[in-house]
Amino acid sequence: MSDIGPELPEDEALAAEHALGVLTARERAAAEHRMARDPAFAADVQTWRARLAPLTDEIAPVTAPAGLWARIERMLASNDNALGVLRRLRFWRAATVGSLAMTAASLAAVVFLAARPPEIVTQPRAPMGPMMDARLMTDGGQPLFLAAYDPERKSMLVASLVPPGADPDHSHELWLIPSDGKPRSLGLIDPGASKAMPMSEPMAAMATEGASLAVSVEPLGGSKLEGPSGPVAAVGKLSRL
Amino acid sequence: MPAITTSDPLAVLLPRIASGDRAAMRQLYDATSAKLFGVCLRILSDREESEDVLQEVYLTIWRRADRFDAGRASVMAWISTIARNRAIDRLRARGPLAYADPVDDLQIEDEAPGAEALLQSAQDGAALGRCLSELDDRTQAAIRTAFFEGVTYEALARRLDAPLGTVKSWIRRGLLKLKGCLER
Image (tube, rainbow over all chains, first blue to last red; front, side):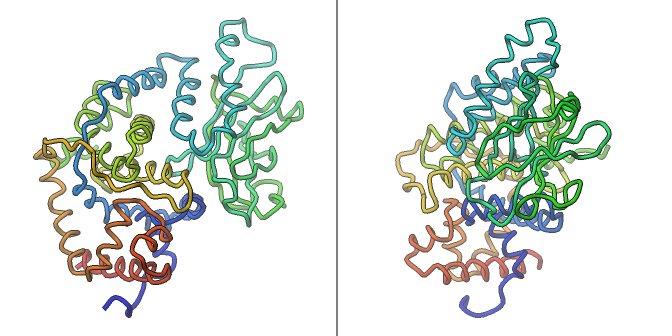
């Protein structure tokens, strides 16, 4: 009889359900957030994924379309370190292709911006500094936010890939962490939104290559502390386009 | 560095991929793309969307190969999980009740999965299969449908024509039993 008997403890049940794939988009996003801040929960999800993975053996292989490898290889090329400046840009475009269904609108501004660097890189170094971008990923490697620093306007453009309406009980706060390691708040970003966050002159000077960006999950309205008070959901580093 | 066991022939490719070796990436693609395309199609039932997701999956592998931990999972299990997750994300983007139409006109590849891959996963698969078969039929059906179709509880309840709470309870109890059985 399956109508009686114990169930899994709530936390592990959620981990198992996330691994099985029965959660809604919103619950999935919440579970990914939680994996980023709760190692025990993340370990439970991984364990359940490993338990269920053998089921995929039952899925019959289907030959992938002939041209697909060529498409992938073109994108690998642009992700190759040797290609330098254009690497991040093309890589970013590649990554956005897969997320378009959910985020086409919110990414439009960022992608538009990303489409400009060839002019910039072929010009002598502009006095205001280079154009940079960052992908902010969870521990599990899922991109949750995209950011681009626009040196001309001294602002950080950020797009949230978290489904709109997810996590209504928290605010997501973007932090710039320069070489001194001290986080500076850039502002709040709603799930699914994209916005430009203007930066003060001293703050803009800290947006250098290799500086980290992070998003923390905060009480509504943002952290009351000087730095993040809640768990960090995603991190990335600024690198030149 | 610990020796890489021969039980997972794909595991040797991951460090090479992490260092940017495109030939290794091509080998992994050749060895696994049909499997992963099958996984995406099973969940999405749409070739075009499955192609997009598959492309994204291999780019994720390319970027994240350094995160692969041979001690935790086989390469196939790791990349199949990535493919399932991305396909489910794509399915959810269609809407909360979305599920794909049943697959019927897909061209199934004649070629069986590689002998090595079969050998490697046979043991795990056998244990899981045995433990699933210990569940009652409807629980087993609910878990299988959830896994293979990537649908939400709500869509699953509609499919199985059962109340949401009941389906949730079947699955939660079923998963607990599954865990107990696999740990025996």
